[in-house]
Amino acid sequence: MNGPRDWTMEVFLGRYRNITVLVLVLFAQLLMLAWQVRGKQDVRLIRVWAVTVITPIAKVVETVRSHTVGFAQEYFVLLRAAEENRRLKDELGKLKLQNQFLRSELEMADRVRALAAFQARSPSKTIAARIIAAGAGVNSKLVYIDRGATSGILRGMAVITPDGIVGRVLAVYPIASQVLLVTDPTFAAGVISQKHRVQGTLKGQGHSTCIVDYVQNEEKVEVGEMFYTAGTDRVFPKGLPAGIVKVVRPGRTFKEIIVSPAGFQQGLEEVLVVIEGVHQQIPDASQPSASGIYILPPPPGEAPQAAPAPGSQFQGTDADKLKERYRAIGAAQGHRFGEGGAPDFTVSPAPRPPAESKPPGAAKPPSP
Amino acid sequence: MTEFSDEIMVQRTRKDRSARYQPVVMSAVCLAAILFQVYVPLLFQYLSFLELPLLVTVYFALMKRNQIAGLTIGFVVGLLQDSLSHHPLGLFGIVKTLVGYFAASVSMRFDVENPVMRAILAFFFFLFHQAFFWLLTSALLEQRAALDLGRLSVFAALNAAVALPLFAVLDKMKGTA
Image (cartoon, rainbow over all chains, first blue to last red; front, side):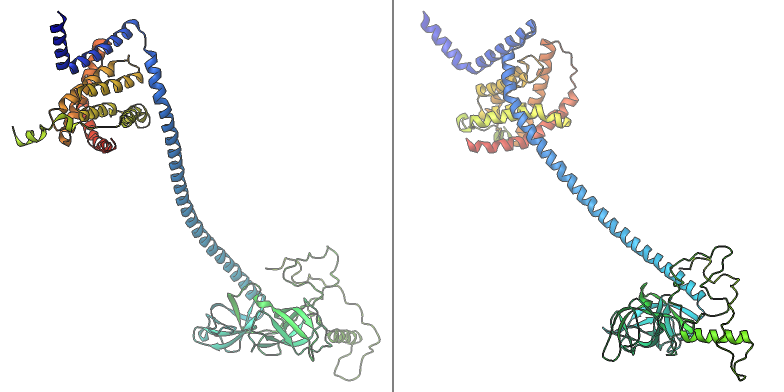
């Protein structure tokens, strides 16, 4: 009985095995679906398994992704930062250059203003010039200025700045001139010290300092003392600052005096060429310099004691003081020098009445 | 029969043409496809049109050339996909079981190594998958979602376009079998 039926079943399953499996699988799922929908229940176990399998992998992937993305983002941020850094550096460089240019322009404007102020104050007639080139030699202390024969420059003229002497014109060309600086070994100028009126010759050494030669060992020169031009060289007018003493030591015959040139203190870009020099008095060492120190005017009703009377020029040396005293004694006794006889020098001259006007330069601050 | 149809409808035996894959590789690929489906759209919303589990099911069913193997792959992948969705279990399972079965049936008649045939099959099975899924949700769950055929066709074309390189990559894994 069962034989043919089993054979039929085997044939059926063998022939329709695939479709049978399909139907069974679909039927099982439909049942599961219907059970869930009808009973509003869930096959939680399958979901738990699926989530348990998937979520750890997702977590790992997310961790890797976040780190990778974070790294990539930081990399690109760094790239952008590097790019921005380069741009800012370029900008900073440009601004620095611009700042430097503006500073130099400002400094030049200050120098030109100081030069103009000095030019207006100085009794000598000067012409402003700009240094445009240096000498070709390695050790040469020559410069070229942009003024020449067409500007009235002549060979041998003094070249100065408001701070002091710079050199002298060595050669003149139509639109330029060659200036020998005070630091050149072949340069020489007559100078006199401010405090002890010691005369000497300023000479260049080929570097930044100069020496004052031909000063006897017995002469007194102090460190920090200023040397002024003596006017004896017929190049520089008397009374221009030449240099400040840095080192003084006794030598074999003459003192070894090393001075720092005064004219180079603010750099050397604009200079003045003395067209017509006027000799000036060397300022007294006991008096503060007119430049750089402000002195109040005397209180009302009090006459300045130390200031010289207007019209009378202060004589720096003892001989000058003695000569002034004798002139005062003669004037007090009505004596005229050169007409024979002599006044009584034992009588002290009458004290000079106090000055009525304020000393020049004391009432206002010195110009820069 | 044309020359093209002769080429496509090859006469080799099914055993010769059946590809072998290591179970680990198949499992990893299926898991990766499901992972892609649940994870990547979080980051890239525009990639949500990709139905990688379906493409993987179609590929393995085509390459196995065995209807039972095809429907089993579809059943497992579909059930996993169901487990990670808010639908009742079985919706994706039923659809993908059918897809696996039909893909394996087709593979016994056509040369599924041909890229054109692969693209056509991917396009067709995507449409079938979406339509049958819509039918099930409408019939069993009474969810009246609109079936936008134009949009579905575009997505089917995009999935077919993705299927070509994806199948080529998966072909490389046959060598590990």
